[in-house]
Image 1 (cartoon, rainbow, N blue to C red):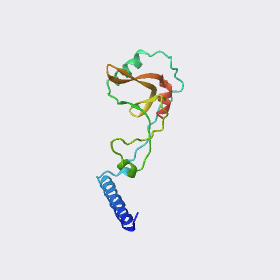
Image 2: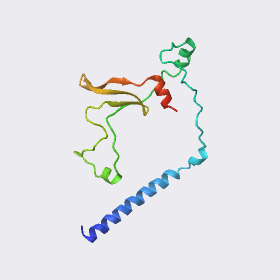
Image 3: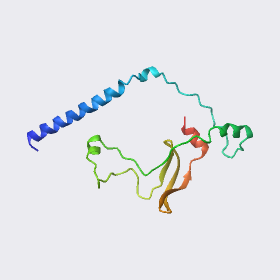
Image 4: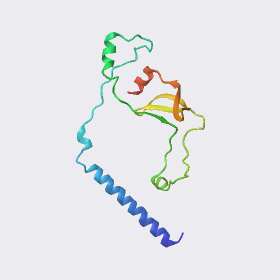
Length: 146
């Protein structure tokens, strides 16, 4: 690379850094002072004494009824990869991104970003689906919320 090309690349890098700095400044100047939010951790009940096979009482059913219709997002994760922004901007059609999973390894099933199961991809009526192969117990899921 010639000195002129190196200088042009350095100018482009600085321009990109300036754009990011402006975007970050705009994001923090939106009037929200994150330090002033004074978030406190929630006190969680200890569920360690509950058994997975314990029957649900009528009172428990009434309490559950209030949350059964709350919508959640379920997603399947094939894998993850970390790349820097420079490489991200160079991606185009046909690019291959290496993931942290081995071919044939089960996919993660996430509900609102929390792992609840593992599964394998299936095709049903020309649509993709997932067959759950390992579901994490309710007790383990509750423990992970801490």
